[in-house]
Length: 360
Image 1 (cartoon, rainbow, N blue to C red):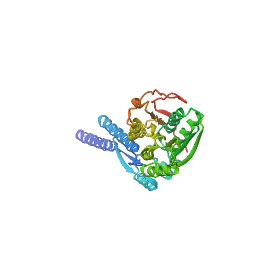
Image 2: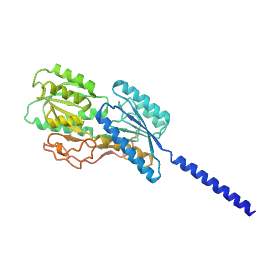
Image 3: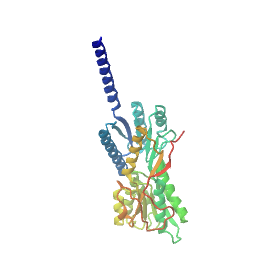
Image 4: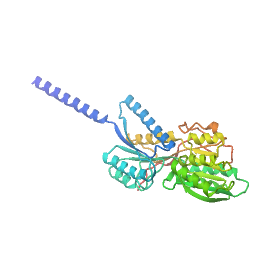
């Protein structure tokens, strides 16, 4: 009888250990995180990807050290233009069909991915959007640069250059398909209004990447061939803005001031060398990608994260170059402006806009 009890105990212990090992093995399977990037032709977006993937590497090192789950990234790139919009729809549907644990996406279009987001919601796959949002649908978190601040800082700086009462003759180069560029344009115009700068919008064009930027540059020079017929060209990003600034400079139209957003190193060099561009509100692209990855990981492990938070942008001008660390960061704590400020003092802190998840 004693031997029978010993055998039974041995079997129970063996079964318990086997089940524990199986359970532990299952627990250690990596989180599959689908990541949808927009463009690898826009340097700022490449820097965002680098920041995101570097944060994933650091999180995996921490997971190895603590014996917890690592992250496996499943990455897709949509590409530029209308083709990129449709390609990203296919890619997000693919990730939903794979039933990944989390999706992190930089949307090519605010509305185009709404059906995909609703499908992910139905399958309880959390979705983190960065750079711009998706609507309608329910996001688990949204991380972006402070795009309204970016436009505002440009407008604030340009306003300081036009305080003599002369009407500002303005060309706008926008891109109305994503929230980030819309907010930038709104911030720019709001600052001019706040400063009571009398201005005239001579023409509006659309460009967001180098090819369309070159095309718009040609149209600007053709539509406004006379020197001193344009005071400022505002571009919503460096993807299109760099080509525009280059063509304007080559044409000898150095009387035009160029205000732009993103912080591409080539644009920063234009400011340093006095080549048309006078201000570039620079994103901290690396930290933005990191914030998106960290928010997603925290969601996976059950932490509560703010729904909507903004990474500040930095106004790069000839006066602030020495304070600017580059778009990979780190984000400075403060900034000393040499021009008249129209609002709150600049802060390097992450700005929490909304703590709770959006309910729709």
